[in-house]
Length: 200
Image (tube, rainbow, N blue to C red; front, side, top):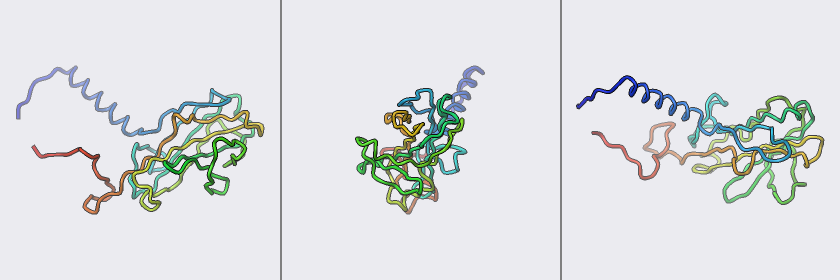
């Protein structure tokens, strides 16, 4: 093995880079989402998790129950006001669906805002944590390899004119890995096509 000397500054730089990379991997897709609609001061974040939101993953195993969580911080002027909250998911090739108060998913026509059904009606807090999808096992739902896009919206005063949501350009994502092959160890998924590892 050929070892080369390097400066303490170089080692420190590599250590900081490694810590930054690990931190980014741990946070996964839980990032701030763009806000659209009436109250642009609202903030939305979201991501996929298999441990109740302790950490977030860019890809979840197809064999594990996974959640898609969106956290919203309503605009300060909306905090304390009664609002209808809407939960919407887009499934590739299937279109948009809305989650009703009793947990039923109904098709949604985005061209017809009047067809929106609230998931909940409540006085808005400073922070609202919404489980868009709860305990979905990709293999059981025949969704291995699929990415689901989630949106949360709210409207105050019973008027859709006040609707505020995470923009369609920045959905919260639940990406489900392909099912693991029979030869793969438990809780793993196949490598990305084209990648390989060799002993050296």
